[in-house]
Image (cartoon, rainbow, N blue to C red; front, top):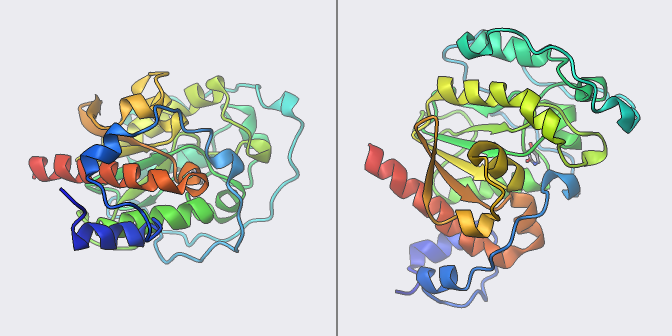
Length: 283
Ligand code: URA
């Protein structure tokens, strides 16, 4: 099977070079390198100012939306502060959406609260069919209070667009919900520490339980390891459907990795197609 015109149009949308060889999806899959995506958010260069996205969460079940405003960045604190752990709010597992949002906003369960400008809860439809999970806010996200607004986010938006999805306001089958493993930016975009991931995990799990997406896409090593509790490389975990809390999860490369390795966009395209198939089977 060769790429159809529609598939090629979608790959173009994702920025796959037009000279990409016309091979079947199967052949591309077979040729897939078995490699872990490197830490993603950590080295996302932000070349342009973040776009002001009109896609503030469509809060069907939540308090009125407060428009996101850039906040002055606080100076990055010494890394010795990073491992300090505080108490997490009690009862996260029972919280509704507004309570969860508030708990995240006030969280002081790890040292990242000292260096963040603000928490980054997530964006999109609170009952979205699709939930996307990334790693952690970077500099732009910390400023804007919204996930994936830097260069990696622009690629993510193009990838979503290629499968008919958006973060902008739309019905639940078109508007995704995007969240990160960490709700606070690690200083200097370093990798999340295991204890930070552990402290933040209940927030993500509660987001999943409340959104109840029909399919999730875990992007990059940290999202995959945190959700699947696996240290297998992405290359070995992608291409099949996993389950977390009963929700089907498809694994793919982080957009920041894809910016550095554009040839692998075709694999990410396969992964999005797999997620779409899962969803079609569930509806
Ligand atoms: N990378 C991520 O994983 N998440 C963001 O929000 C931004 C960059």
